[in-house]
Structures are given as structure tokens and as C-alpha cells.
Image (tube, rainbow over all chains, first blue to last red):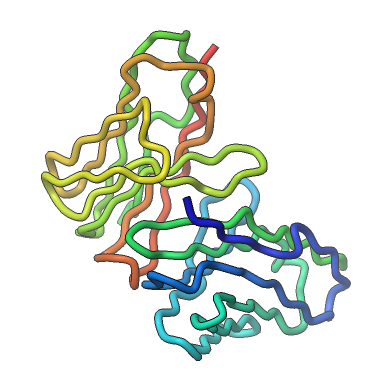
Length: 109
Length: 113
């Protein structure tokens, strides 16, 4: 069993604040690192898939970085909006997938 | 396109009963996955399939069986349900392997009494 850790567990920010979360994973047998957004009463939706050390991905106000040598990825949200409120999951892939428990983000209007 | 669908959405079973959860995808994806979601825990992989006719064990396979007779369908079976199998089950599919994003179904909430 591999350990994928996400921090913080939960976060409350004011609308307009920028924020970031961390995903830590084993640095060996790395295939890919996924980020998913999971809104209440819906299913997880993919944000990014990163495979190379140093990868940076961006989608609108959300971006992510990857460091496979030290085993971490950061997800950044710039200028948080209430609709960004969700749980953000990361998943580490070696020969199969291991998900973290997520960071629950609440953006207060 | 419907994407990934799961049947049923809810089910209550008594201990010892059996049932099959159906996952269907219409995106011609090769890979399919079954996960369970429990409070305080991340999604945990039960079984997965890398193509029609193939299956493999994930992190928590005990008590479950799967079959992938058709590319678009991935079935999860519980032969003798136990209260520890009370969970929300999610199916997902991806075009190919780990470098491709997964598309998730809406989930099945199973309660075993």
C-alpha cells in the first residue's frame, strides 16, 4: 500500500484570495500524477495529468506543478471564487492508482 | 454521449446476499476501474481492466469479483455481501493507461445490513 498525502485537509478562504494545496507521494515507480476536482453530489472531474518532473499545467485560474524527485505536487488557485468550492483530489499512479483523501476548499463570498 | 453510467444508483443488501454492479462507458475507452469511497479515506482501487477480457486486482480486491466481457462494460460482483462492504462505489474509465485522465460514473451507494 502506497501513501499519498494531501494537505491541508480543509481550507476556508475569502473570495479573491489565492491558495495552494500539496500532494505528497512516493518518489519511486512514478508513472503519473493526477489532480481531480470533486463537487458535492457529483463525480470527480479531471483537472490535470502530469507525467514529467518539472511539468507545469494551467487551466484558467488553476495551475499545478510536479516534482517527481522529491515526491510532491502543488495545486494553485488564483483569485478564488465561490464556484471553486470543492474537494481537490490527487492520485499517484505506479502500476495502479492511489488517491489521497483530498483537500476540501470552501470559498466564502 | 452518456459518458460513464452506473446501475443501480442505490441498493440495500442483507449480509450474505449477492449482487452485481454494472458500469458502462460509450467513449471506446480501453481501461476501466472500480473504486470504493469510505469516510475519511481516499478512493481505493478494487479491480481494474486494461482491455476487453482482462482484469487485475487493485488495492482492496478481497470479497469482489469482476468481469469485462465487452469493452464497454465492467461488472463488479459481490458474492456474499458483508457489512464492511457498505460504501459508495465509483466506476471510471480512461482512454488508455495512467497518463490519461479518468472519467467517473455517478456512483452507487450500497448498504449491507
